[in-house]
Image (cartoon, rainbow, N blue to C red; front, side, top):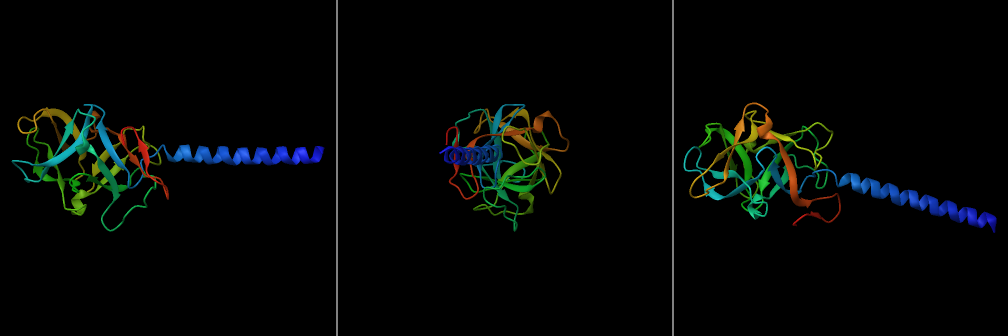
Amino acid sequence: MQITLTVYAFIISVLFLLLWSNCEGRESELNYVTCGSLVKLLNTRHNVRLHSHDVKYGSGSGQQSVTGVENADDANSYWQIRGKPGRPCQRGAAVKCGQAVRITHMKTGRNLHTHHFSSPLSNNQEVSAFGENGEGDDLDVWTVQCDSIHWERDEAVRFKHVGTDVFLSVTGEQYGHPIRGQHEVHGMSSPSQHNWWRAMEGVFIQPSQEPLRHDEL
């Protein structure tokens, strides 16, 4: 009888350790932004979320404008994290620091993009949304700059453009009509407090699992 109880206690202990280990691993997975995730990105200096809409710039490239908005509930502020052209990243895999990604606007299917046009308000480098159905060109690629091994969800990161070496930034300039109060988003040549971003609300994809819903989604 004593042996049976000992074996039973041992089995229970092993099962508990396995369950605890699995939960720890699951909790660790949830700490990262992953490929395929749909997120809102907050500029931590100016407290605005990266945003786009089917409104074209009236100058520069004439492409779809990208702005920053204070409203946390705007559905036009969702972006999907994807691999670069020809090299898709594994769905649900944690994005590595230094990894090249595309950031695709959910509502319009256009990619976060920059090029050698001047931005309309600050005369920095224009940032636009470009392409159709998630396909654009090589100027849609950004690297995620962070200090850890992977992009952690509670960590502020920078996005550096591969083609032109600028950082995705906001410095506070605001538009008038027809997008009154929205902030200009542009590219700056140097890292600064104006180009820190944090993942906020979203749907975070896990490997071989259903999307993990977070906050309002």
